Image 1 (cartoon, rainbow, N blue to C red):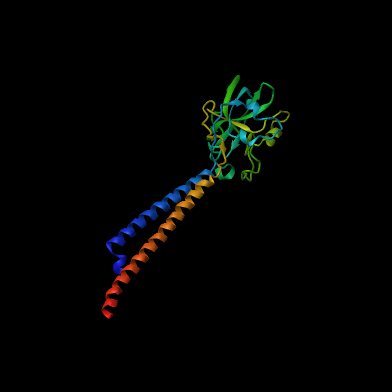
Image 2 (tube, one colour):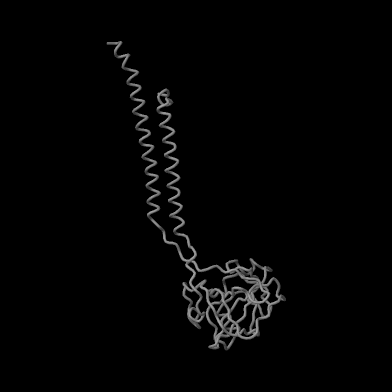
Amino acid sequence: MLRTLFSPRIMGLHLLTIGVLVAFILLGRWQLGVFQDSGMPHAATDPAPVGVTTLSQVGAQMQGTSVGRRVTAEGVYDPARQLLVADRRPNVDAPGGNVSRGQGYWVLTPLRLDDGTLMPVVRGWVAEPAGPMAAPEGRVTVAGRLRPPQGTDSVQRRAEGLPSGQVQTVSTGELINLWSGQKVRNGYVVAEPPSGALAQVKVPPPVVGGELTWRNLAYAANWWIFAGFAVFMWFHFVRDAVRSDRDRAKSPEMVLEG
């Protein structure tokens, strides 16, 4: 039996089967990877900028499709109501609160639009609360990306509280209380580029959920079924070769006995 298994003819079959198995398994893993990647969120087509008033309303919830959209807004900054969002890194996706304590501040300034409403604008980031953060004077046009309001419980707050003029989150509800008597639009805009000497706060473009391509999973299963069939055929040929050699070995003995 061992002589048959290690004969040149069967050794060639072994090597061919191994090559086929490796190829089919890798092809199956590739199709499985395509299937898994198809379900992951990915960047959506970035539409042209629109006026912020079309996506952010007063007292109305922001639509999910509006998050991350490029917007423009025209108006005059209200520096008297400017706030610092404490314990923030220059990235909207980075965690805030105690996790980022001492990492810097977002400069949040309301932009008074032509209809009198206030649009919160994160103009940029500073490392220290005494950094250069004066808002531009006069009428300005702000370009940036729209973000949803942050929940007041979305971060771990400082136990000792914050100094006057600082907040932990950009919460529309909290801003309505702080900017009393004003109509505040929902969400906030992260300016791109930042104004003055402020550093840019990184904000990602809109993303959409992936849609699983089930056919790729079927393709992966097919390749692995082919691999199993290759093993079956290898076993079939090897078994027949062993039986054939065994029968040939017995034939002379039977002739001699006869």
